[in-house]
Image (cartoon, rainbow, N blue to C red; front, side, top):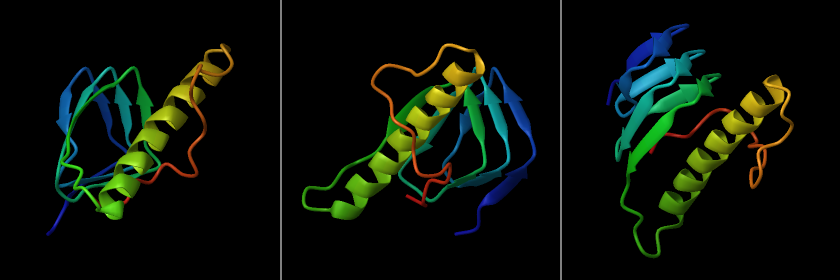
Length: 106
């Protein structure tokens, strides 16, 4: 499947469908990000005050789907942590940094 590529773009107050797209070094501010079960790519992106709408079936006994959703949650936690630190507020309760800003294809 070919992905539509977005590079160095800023999305402000928009509903953005992540599925089927590749976002590289993009900024999302106050967006609603919609993610469904299909391939996508996020690399070096930043997220500020975004809401996520995730529609994902986690198959029983399917460790790959669990890894993918964990990677997404880790990325969201990292973005919240970075935003809190930039605002001088320290850490966000209940969050931990993620290993990278990349989320593997779903």
